[in-house]
Length: 480
Image 1 (cartoon, rainbow, N blue to C red):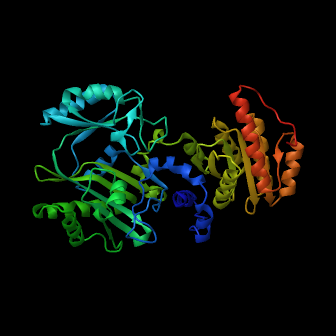
Image 2: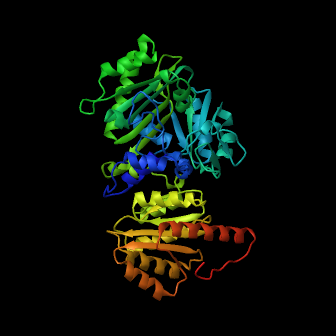
Image 3: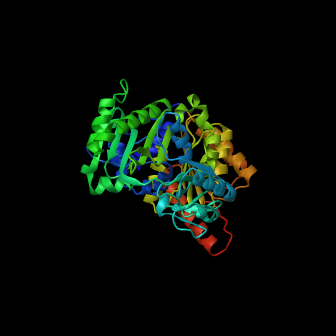
């Protein structure tokens, strides 16, 4: 997960200030368990299937994570414009609309339909709703559509890729059922091992591709694409043949692959995943389920995509952080972190873990943060009910320590912060910053050494945690 977090931060930064991870840094972070808790953010990330070192080996963390994801029905609507064959269906946001769609599909000849909850999370089929319904994908008769819609719409779907609260379902996608003869897996993604687009495919589709890669790696086909040439029909036919398509369907399968690549390139996608990519009993090649991610940095070229963003599927704190142009990832700990620089932020989380604490977030205010951004950062930290203490760790180079100090002071006064704050400042204008804090009258816990600061914030967080459990109010006399 280390690489995924670093790359997410890299592509979130508008100035692209951060370089690729060095080998020494990888060794330094390899032993810590801090980043393991970042697995919640796989909700929006299809794990990469290719490592950066060995294209023959599978890995779960080598794909760019800064992206926009859209719902399945939106992906299908776009894919149709490129001549890609998808299942016929419509989206519904109310029970009445769902029943109407079911009748329309029945009138077009469908006997059974598939009702799919629209959430930006994998594992829908094995998930469950807080309404009690098991599974986010159901095959049913047209008459049963309303019954399933009532138990899906307005409820949260919990899957292996969501937190315990799940994701809200405001829309369902109702498709005519197609009878499948054979299922395949097909994906196009950007991969560093091939220095550009790559195809990952398997004859074992319709199942978790990571499981296939782990249990039967020989079933995975990988092929790089020359981005200057594109996916040629001959290469696509070769892949279709290796997958095991019947000879009469190889041309159709290859044609769909070429169109998928065209869609991938023209829409600035980072991932187009079709699972299952199927051969029907009638002899058609269809894309039955699609997951598409788009490069966030290319959205200025894709105004249509910006309208498709569903912020209800995102962490509200991350949405708020984006408004302030902050790099934020929420975690499950109880110690809030406010740091400048991605590397220092990672090191800060590590040292908190070293002293027995749990970081509640990754928050990098960057090198040129304003007083407004610092205050916004505290608003986000203050909105997290799990945060028991905050550690501010600033090394002032481009970032001036006095700006951070002003942000802290204004945030404490305006937000009426009751959360204990440990502050460690070093670098540009540090003396001025300390003077501002001393004259503010605020009871902040100062530390000159990072190790000391981490020990202090862990100690304070534990005290507040115990007091909260006992339903007591705690106040601190300085020094602790």
